[in-house]
Length: 323
Image (cartoon, rainbow, N blue to C red; front, top):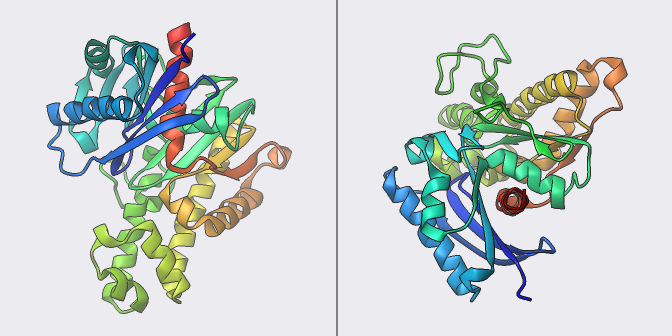
């Protein structure tokens, strides 16, 4: 009997990643393309279909062996209908992605939020394997959240949940794409941190960063921040630590609300600056948590890297296809 194969796709970040996994939850093929340059709408869908076909072809896997497709998308989705409500980076609104891909491949398709997919991947294969409940905090261009409870992804009736980046956390007046100011995203996303660090570079308070990236926010990436700090830019480190502290307050809120067994910290910022994030998040939790919750939650760094979302989507899609 031919081995069953499951396709997982991650649309988060600046690149789209497609993987094929076997029944033992091992990746047997991996392909990626940039999302940059897409004008939204149909162009994004075409590139998704092309990448899935390319991955299957390059792996020399007969389409008959493919059992399901799971795809993680940024923003809120309707998991039952396979509908992407909003995906800002692709200029999507109410896109029936599952229906489109099912017509293209004649296979069952599951659509989920990209951070939910990443947290589910860590729950099934990574640092939170087998935990009762797992929350994820993934700072990047924005800040994504996800939650797996007893094997199920926490969600509402028609929308995915855990848009934690858009929750208010300070009284500051900075905004992050919505009318509400002082949100976690406006205080702790890479974009927010890069914006503050660009000012430091402009004022010559971060000479290493100025040399590496100038004052261009788009060039101040996670690894650039790491190089700046290693080079001696103390003010940049202070900004990063403040962002990590804000993420720590979000973790405190999660613990008080949902008492997860594990909180997974992931994303490019955490991956590049893991020590700072672990220190600040753990310290903030220790200083602000109710005493009775002090030992309820473990804080862990994501273990699967860029593969987490695609792996989680592949496994989720396979599970849903069998229901």
